[in-house]
Length: 232
Image (cartoon, rainbow, N blue to C red; front, side, top):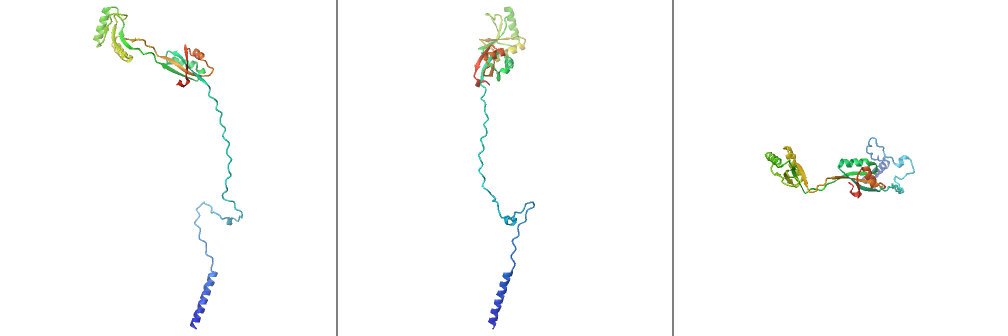
C-alpha cells in the first residue's frame, strides 16, 4: 500500500509542475540602454506601420564627365626689338633721354661703358716762371715734409715739379690730396690714353619702331642693334 501511495503522489506532483510551466507568464524583454538627451530613438520598420521599405543604400548613378574647361586664348607676345642708343655724358643724361622717348619704348635701362684705363699717373706741379722759382718751390715742398719730388729740367714740363708716378689712379689721387691739403696745387697727368666712361641707353620697342626715330627722339648720335636677352 505504501508504494502505491508514493507512486500516486509523484504523479500528482509532476502533473502540478507541468501545469505551472504551461501557465507561467512570458519573460519580459531585456531593458534598452538609456537614450542620450537630444538624440531620436531608432524606429523599426515594423513599428512605423509601413510595408514598403526603401533601400538604405542605392548604387550611385555614374556621373557624366564634365566638359573640359574652355582654354583661354593666349595672345602671342608682341614682337619686340632692342637697341642701344648713345653715348651720353652721364647717367642723368641717359635717364633724361629715356623720358623723352618713353611713349615709344617698353623698357629703357641706362648702362655704363667704362673708359680706357691709363698706363699710370704722374702727380705734378705746373712749370714755374724760371729755374729759380722752381727751386724755391721745391724747397717749400721739402720743408712741408714731402719727399720724392724733382724739378723737371727739359721737355714740355721744364721748371715744373714731378711729385711721384703711380700705377693706380687711387694712389695718385691720395698723393694729390695730401699735397693740396698742404697748399700745393698738385695735378694728375695720365700716362698714355685714358678714355672717359660713357653711358648708353638700352631699350626695347615694339615692331615698327625704328632705331633712327629713337635716336633722334633721344638726342643721341649713335644707335646699335641689341640682343633682347641681354637687356637687363
